Image (tube, rainbow, N blue to C red):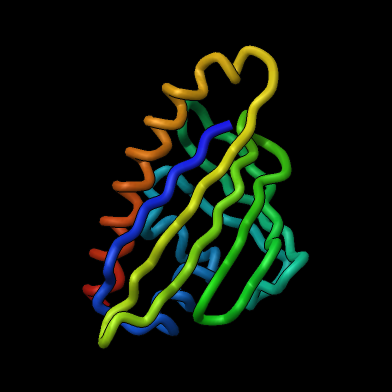
Length: 143
């Protein structure tokens, strides 16, 4: 199992950041390896499933379920199929004056051979999320 936590301050309100992040159609704008997302309905609610089509070491479809949602405060997503690690992503949105502290906590578990390369995978995913967060900040602050 691996776990990491990342935060960034974004010069937008929690409502603006949450609304953008909770809209799967906007994901490809800030997560460079997500080609598209497919959902049954918007806005998302607890229990909804979506599919993220990614191009990372080949094109893959990852099924994700919304586990928890507190508008403008928290969004928890869990991969349920399509990836080796099936990560859980806990996203929080905290008011800091005129800004938002956006935090993501990622935890994932693997079985079989993959557990032997978890330390390397954890570092790779952690670096990738640094890039995602800076991209999200750049995109949102340009709006």
